[in-house]
Image 1 (cartoon, one colour):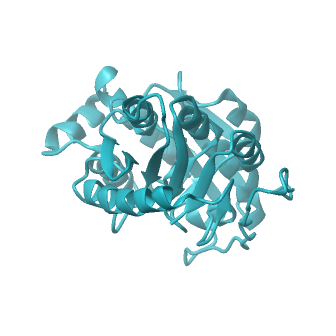
Image 2 (cartoon, helix red, strand yellow):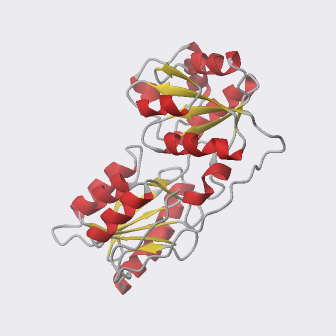
Image 3 (cartoon, rainbow, N blue to C red):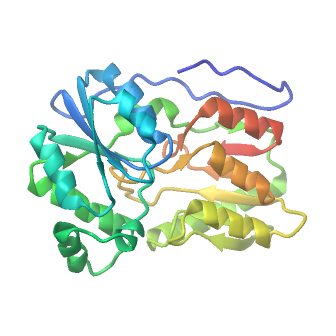
Length: 296
């Protein structure tokens, strides 16, 4: 990972320490499967997974979602449509994959927009509640039935997960700190209820709560409701007992761009539970726009 350099002396930046990647599984994994959604996280994992001794990478990619550049970073890639659960599992078992990670955004709504195969349809039929955690949890169970374990990717991604006292940009104003603390309480509660993990607040008022539409739309909606003056604060959290196997809270340059475009001046995330992607671009954009990104 590149060394980050200060851009504006007046901005307060606390660096994320580089963490040595350690295996948390009892056995050494030589072949790893990647269920790859969109954006840059699958590429980040693939670039650095071999540092820990992984010799072979097999990726499942989804048409219209997965970045095609992933193909050059893995040994094999199989392109599927979202909802083809049976073919996904067969692709792994045929290639001897016994461990896999799920990375990138794979919107649960796509399982309804596209026609699921028989195995996916049967899985969905058995679910009494259909949200991100129940759907992806059920996928993990289906993988397990065929001898494939869905595991956390965190051991390979720790260097990009900021700890306490991380901050980019100017000091938070008193009002922003109060809103961040208020937003943390609200976000923790909505995550407990399986509603979402992001809120937008301003002056002690909740402007937007993330629902099924996802983080980006929540930010846009909250920013619009903040009015012309803007100055809203967004808070993104992980729920208690969060299952990081299929949902790692992430923030990248696009997230910050949406905030700035819609009048949100600060984004607070949970320390040790959120990945920061494309950090150099993220830092440059935040500093240029005097945007605050910090951990709680």
